[in-house]
Length: 444
Image (cartoon, rainbow, N blue to C red; front, side):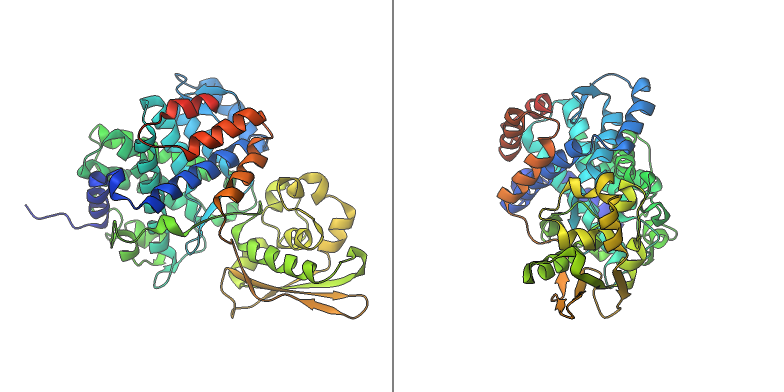
């Protein structure tokens, strides 16, 4: 029999054979970091209207309680928990991101893996292995359809189209699927991929990570029961690569498995806004640090940014929290005048503040193709005639374990007691083959 060398089969072979001890310690540690960030973002997102709408619409139809609804103090069936937790983790756009592909793998992968691990009683080692593999596959596939020499299609939202495949790999690993079953799960998940950029700034955009998590779990469960998919679902004619990319580069997906670890390029957002706005905020904070800025003395704010980033974020007057997350004008102003940048700076009272709105009117975005998509430069002209200019800045800076834990505390502390927050952080950092996901679930 000829060996199956399709991209999905190669990944399925690798995932099936992978063991926790095969992964470098830094990869396992990154899986812990990703999970900690996910739990914090999910807890911080439970107050968002999209999460509340999902809860009201779907919980009345839930099945057997088996998995935690993070921050809501109750359980539901695993499939619904994957959806709700994935949605809440994305609700404030405060999640993780891959440095090159700009996909947010944590929400779909961690929400699906947690929901199934709780139902199955998995240990911490099984859980960490599944998360590491799921995030790795998500990042690899996003890179294969969007990072040079691939030519991406901006019309597709990366997390929506690749996150479900990563979730399928993660949950398939928990289920103990064989290589051929994992190949099928990848194809089944690919058939459910979705997420159009037209949804940017809408409530519908925020549910896509939850949808991907649910699709991935469903794919692995169906593959376990014998449902098949084409072997070349990723690299074949009319397959995933052709559909979701102008020109795919599939070696990013299936080459150097076990040697190149894309999870190590995961970054964590310091600000609750679209990742393409982080270089803008960083540049604005550089400007603010140059002088004791008086907002009334600002005459104009010029922002140089890549054309694609501008196309996604040119929203002078956002009318909702969701639009505010992707407003270049709003986060430029926040970067200049706010002492601290967190969830409160994206709330409706701040968005509707007349003084903030007046400053947003002074923002002049300038599309500059000479900049990378993750670069920006800001200049602020003052009434005195002085102009303050930032260096060209990039997006998410590396976040230490301490800083990541503090970010977790600030979000989870809004819905959990300080004692539970500290116990939960400690339990996540200590996850190992000897620990029990059920203990984490109880704290959730």
